[in-house]
Image (cartoon, rainbow, N blue to C red; front, side, top):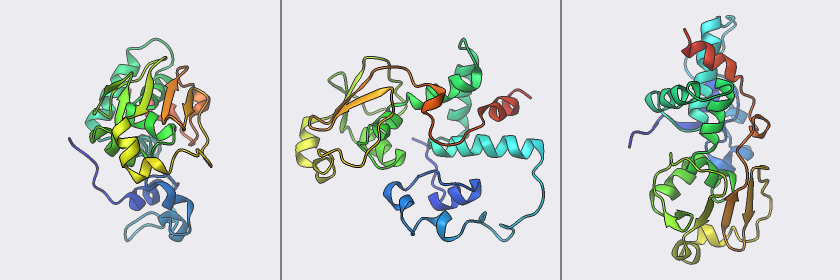
Length: 208
């Protein structure tokens, strides 16, 4: 499986904002963008005004990095969104939010999307009672996402989740931390995206 191996703090600094790629570390003073809030590289501090294409490219890169995908896979999601009814940009964000690794992260079973992807890959997550180890699996309304019973009882990571404290769950999901189980109760809406995204710039970029 292809994956992005670029340093995570470097990615956040490149986009000029926290993408929360390192989970809990991003909320501390050790966060890379908190310690050094400039773009990486020799010419990190630039006064040049970004071109229209530059702004579109940065927005696409930001969203791609946020959800942990390479270009080829991200373009496939855009093509799917373009062929759906409705607004292409919002369709794209909805498809990305419905990915299983993102849902696991949104439910609070992982501190980052990268960790959620790893949990799915290693077979710790079930959908409707069946093990699913494909991070890109698209969830639907009514799906029950849970931690495998063996994993819940045998891994310290999951034992520490059962109090459910300090977690905010999006409105299209519900969760029972005692059972380590969540459910998709609605499709994600544009208002559920908690990071500033200008999806119309991505549509403009790919429509050229």
